Length: 214
Image (cartoon, rainbow, N blue to C red; front, side, top):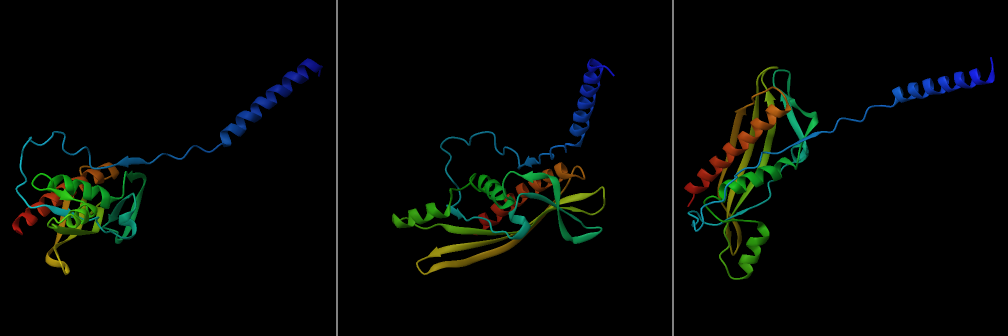
């Protein structure tokens, strides 16, 4: 074989070898899709509208274990309802307790001033009347499959209303809220939509409950 032919042959082998190596490079892992509950209210409330309900302190929502993470969770009720499973490529943009608190605050703020715990402490130091405190514990927040084709967004919250007194917080009322909404599709996007709808429904129920506890 002449030198020019040998050089061309070696070049072909090199190109083929590089192409083969390129085929061995693993694909980049799929990036998880981030979800929240949507934009919420898109219009400002009417100017000059006065709150019809007393001010309220909304504490951070408590949760434990997987419910305090960012995974979108589901259960196979027809197979093993005791196992929480995460979707591989779906994530909440923030832990569910934060998203739920944000949505609940938007709902409650329609009729009252909603304060953070730090704002309440500053108000008390300045001689103001300390408002009541609402504490919530998130006990369930998952997509529950009753069959392979039918699922629900299931939310369970325990709400505790406390009065601020000179001697400390005093229990006024406590109630559990359980809401489920049908998922439009048996997948992560359907579960997200169902859980968002369940959160909105729970927020409305909590607002009505608080309005009754004057």
